[in-house]
Amino acid sequence: MTRKTFSPDQKIVSALLVSVCRFLTGIRAKQNAPLPEGKPCIYYANHSSHLDGLVIWSCLNNAARKHVHPVAAQDYWDKTRFRRYIAKRIFGAVLIARGKKPNRQQRMNSRKPPRRRIRWM
Image 1 (cartoon, rainbow, N blue to C red):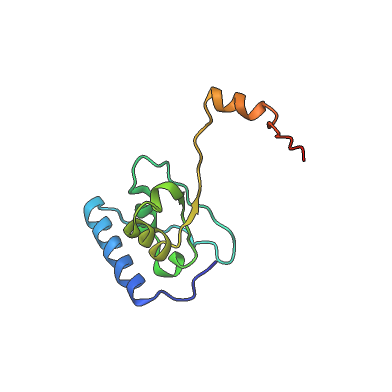
Image 2 (cartoon, rainbow, N blue to C red):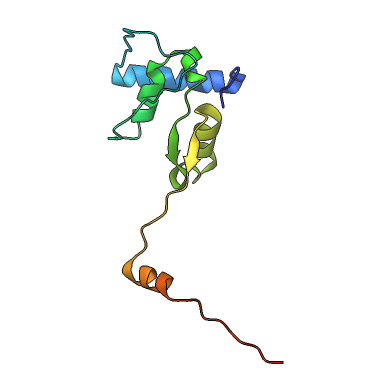
C-alpha cells in the first residue's frame, strides 16, 4: 500500500496542512534514531483531538509519509466529499466501519430463531 510518489495536489495540500499544523502547534520533530526501513511500524495517537493524526503526520518527513496510512472511522471521514478527499487522497487512510453496540432489545431479537413462512400450494 506504499505510494511511489505524491501527485501535485497531494504535495500542495500536504505541505499546506503540515505548515499550518506546525505553525499553530509549534510542533517540531527531533529524530534521535532512524525510522525503520522496510519494517512495519506503528505510530499511536491517544486521540485527545482530531489534530493528533495531523500532528504525527507533520512530524514525519516526505519519504516516511509515503509509507504511513492512518486508520480512521469511516462514518466520520466518509461523511462529506471534503473529509473523504483529505482522508483517502491526502493521508491514504484506511477507513474502518464502526458499529454501534446493539441495545438490549436488539440483542434479544438476534437470539430468536428466524420466523419462517410456510407456503402450501
